[in-house]
Image (tube, rainbow, N blue to C red):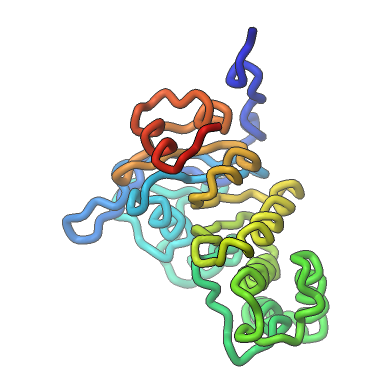
Length: 261
């Protein structure tokens, strides 16, 4: 009888050039090696979850992806073009990638609507009326149209994070980067954020997600990558990683989280 791995579909859009390619990427902080020769590909429409212990390099890889951090070796290619170093070119790259952090990073003196509309107005030069119409549509998409006039202090953590997702989407990114988006939330609000992320995945958004939510990774990811000490120790479809991991360290990590499939 075939197991889950044998039945696993081919990697999404693997017959097309990848959107992102990491070639032997290295990142150092002094003598500390944060990324130690990471090589990886991300395909269009793919949801890739990065898992592994804290401090293993997952978030650093995201920050190197949109040049919030400068790599010390290797290359990051976007649609086959190496990540630029000139600030003006880097800004254009960042416009193609939405990033959602652990902390919400909302402007406290602006309403939810204005937080979402600000990027298109100030960066894209969009007319205010058009930007606010887009912002309202996105707030509706994340289930917060009724909170458009609310300020961050009057929103729950889960609501603030959903506003942050809408704000990132307002720039119409090609790729969404999520850096542990639920880690700062109360447990009762985690589900509402994961639900929005799952909806984006179903709509075909290319996503790289750093997460400790193993149920989400198992259910939503197309590809799972396991990090340890700045390196990839295992990668594959969720069925392989969660039900049939081949590396003992992966089994240990999942076991410590109480994962039982």
